[in-house]
Image (cartoon, rainbow, N blue to C red; front, side):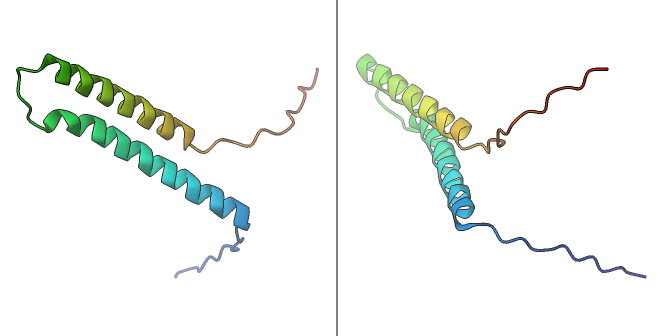
Length: 89
């Protein structure tokens, strides 16, 4: 006893598919930037250069903040439409 359910396939407009593709690219860029920010500290350097450590810290903070901005910007936003007014009793 198996019932076959079919759902109507609604094609996406071309503009929506481009937006989805751009969001995916931005999300992948955000994850990549975060991975780069974390892997900077895996590369061994000489401990005698404190200025280099400061540059690495600044670069990793910049990459992490940029990656966070990409991840937050790539989220899907709900469409804002007109809000219905509440009914009074």
